[in-house]
Length: 332
Image (cartoon, rainbow, N blue to C red):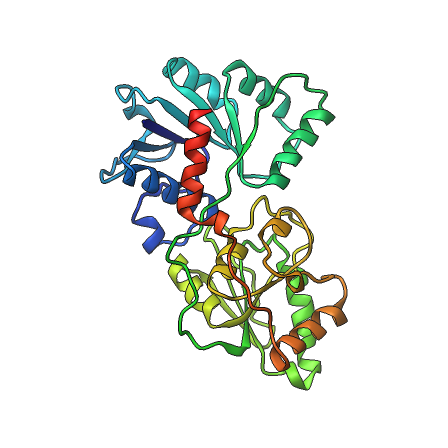
């Protein structure tokens, strides 16, 4: 197969080296893993980006928008932007089209977006069953009558991401996500830790994907603000932490890669039952009423002084399984 991924929204150009050297979001990291994985299986793969100027070559080519006229893909995967399907159909009339959705569905623009999916006979690809349900709920609310033959393909977790011998610091918890995903509530509860002898030495480490301004936490005791750091640095901190502490009930995850990767290295998370996270969790104790300070604090004390859950990642999230799911989409 000859596969072209079209990314018209990425905040920064990326390629296979970016994941190793630069802070980046989960969507862009996922594109790299899928594109490189498909190329390793013998497919010819390009990733084209609206803001790329210099092309890079390797197992996958990362190109600018204007340099793909001679590519002739069999499949075009458009990220996030349904109206771009119309342009892709004109440019590559023989290719099968797919819309890879990653974000929450808002009402703006989706009446025309759903029409573009049907007009181009594209297959919508959603990153969780919850995400798929949200798309269909929106289509019903807009009274859209066309057929949307959506498929679910989870975001991938690397095959080699597993627990290791990293010692766990029971006085360390981490928040590694965009600050809009519950950081304010997380900090509000963390400020109460100092009132409990069992928690007075616990430190909260914070980082973000790099395209958000870091929140000023200089006035909060025991908060270590790392700013934007690389994926490997984040995983090192997660491995050595009591838990991923994300008291997020305000911004639903369409998948929740940070949670899947946390479980993959054996670290539990603590968050609310919101969005797709129930599909990710390996243990019921990873959920708490994040609006109940006492419930949150009691759970952390229990995990520190008694035991914390033993967790693992769902095998369906492993890269090899996810690549097979993409093959099934391409053959649909």
